[in-house]
Length: 184
Image 1 (cartoon, one colour):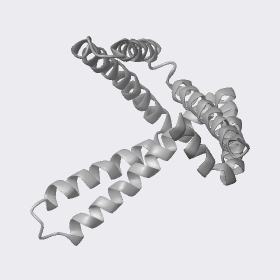
Image 2 (tube, helix red, strand yellow):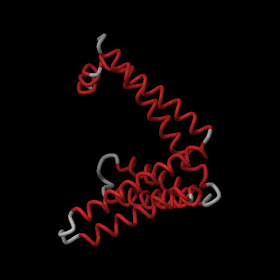
Image 3 (cartoon, helix red, strand yellow):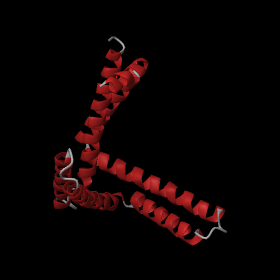
Image 4 (spheres, helix red, strand yellow):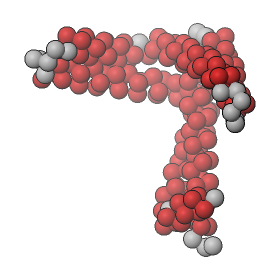
């Protein structure tokens, strides 16, 4: 508790920035939740752009360090990123479908790992929370995969909007804690 109070006191002069960011994230979160299809395609296009730049950078690096023994693998990885990034940008619907499938699989596999870890550490403290987290991931993954591919156009947008909403709320809480820490 003392650590939290000390951190809030350090942030006291910056509380308005946290407040502004929290409000902005809340607004974006609500907008994406209201328009989840637009959110899905925004995430998918951003992912495509990131892959495109990562691929381009990796291809350039491969040629810059041509004498290095990893030239071929670096070049191939870069070309793969470039092609996948371009495919996401040229075919955004198929990209959204693919990302949704990957998200569902990641949630299911991550949930399995969390539950397995929880049972591995079972006598230790808080293993129940890890089990709960794992089961929740499994359920969310099953819901995503159960609605795939027809729900692919809105699932990522909705989840992204919810994430933005909770990020906004957490930043608001940090702002208020920082603001009032200086008054105590």
